[in-house]
Length: 305
Image 1 (cartoon, rainbow, N blue to C red):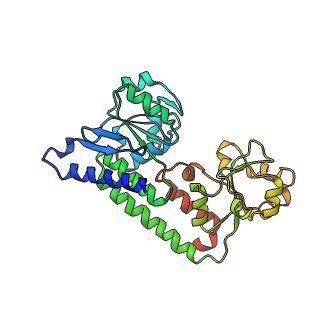
Image 2 (image 1 turned 90 degrees about the vertical axis):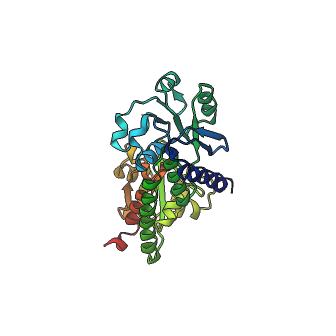
Image 3 (image 1 turned 90 degrees about the horizontal axis):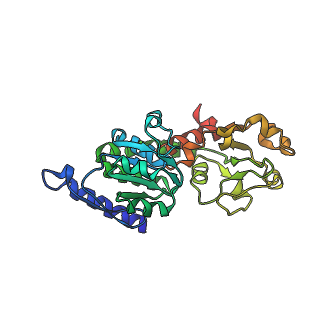
C-alpha cells in the first residue's frame, strides 16, 4: 500500500510539473522516494550518478543515457555504460569523486546501504532511493519513476507498453503448456554439495513460475528466499531441469555431472542442464522481460517451434 501511495504521489507531482507554466521543463518537483523521504528537484535531473546496475539499466532504457555522468563499478550494461566513470561499488564509494562531479541527482537502489543515503545527503547531494520491484507491474512503475526524474515520460510510456505486450505473449504461450517441469535454479555453487538457489518471494522464483516451471525449492517445502540445498534434497525432488545462473562465474554443464551423486539426477542424465545469464533475472531492471522470455523458451521449447 505504501509503495502504491508513494508512486501515486510521485506521478501527481510529475503531472503538475508537466502541466504547469511555460517553463515547466525547469519547474520544481517535490517528490517522495522509496524510503518515504521528501525529495526536491529544480527540474528533470540533467547530471545523474547511478549507484546500482539496475538503476543504470533503467536510466538507459528510458532514454536518459546522456544524462548519466557516472556509475557504480558493477554497471556493465548496456555496453555504453561501461565507458562512464566508475565511482566504486556496493558500500565502497569514492565520495570525493561523487561530489566533484556535481550531480543534481544520485540514484540508489536496495543494493545500497541505507546509511549511504545519509552520507550523501550530508555532502549536500540530492539522493533518490528506488525500491526494488516485487512484481513486473512494480517494474513498470519504476520505469515511470526514473523517466519522471529525468524528463523522459513519453519514452517510458512507449517502452512500458512494449514490455507489457511481450509479457502478455509469454502468458498466452504458457497457458497452453501441459506440464510444469521441476527446476533447480542455481545461484552459487562455491560449495558444490550445497549450492544456493532461489525460494518463494524472490523475483527469480516468480519468473520461473510465470515461464511455466515449478521451483524445486517450493516442491521441497523450503520457505527461505535464498536457501542452500543438500544433495539429499536435490535427489528427493529430482529436478527435470537445472538452470545455472552461476555459469557467469565459470560453472559448467560438465562440472554439474561430476558432482558426487548428481550424475543420476533426471536433469543430468537427460541433458537438461543449461547455462543462463543471471543478470537478466536478478537485476531488477527492464531486462527481466528478456529473462522471462528466455526462461519460457528454455522450459517449454515445444511451445516455440
